[in-house]
Image 1 (cartoon, rainbow, N blue to C red):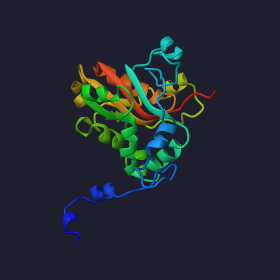
Image 2: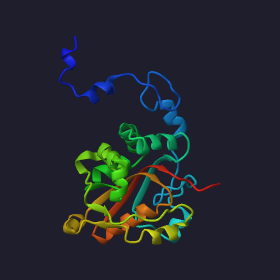
Image 3: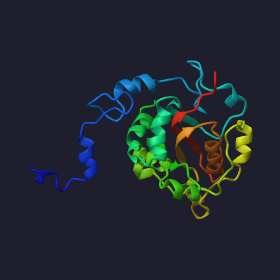
Image 4: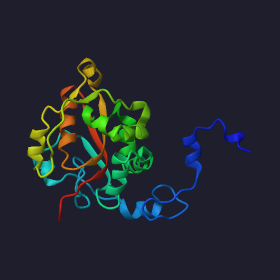
Length: 238
């Protein structure tokens, strides 16, 4: 009776099994049910340059108008608020790489993300410092990028050249100074970015300093258009 399943990959078989929503525990369900997506990741007006919330009809926040970041566009699927910190912690710190699929699906659902992925030449995950990568065992941004556009994903073009001190408690300008020189393009491949469109992928955007620093390195190498795509954005306190 099991012969018809014998040559199918285990992951394919598991994907067919009913499961429970990780948030509300509804069953049967996908990992995040439609009701929880609608409740906890509703569409929201966000700044086109840094993805912070803005009033409906406003394209850019005041800070990005005063000091434009090196991004042409920035998209976030949701606010970094419950239940998403718990989900992301399972993904990043408990080795549950299976979260990449459902999180990437939510990222793709954001308006203008599909065209950005279709029009770009490269999808680049935010790189991790080697020591951090050895400690965690995988780069969550790379797993998301592969789910978003596997054929365009390149994990070796953008490099993290050094680890940086803790960023918590620092203003955006201080974070940017802290990250100066922390990212670089692989020197022997820099020519591949000349005139190219790039999508940068990460799981969470806090101040934006890391993404801005990486985008600046890509522009220096000749990228003509840089879009940032993240799952969750930390909103400022009210």
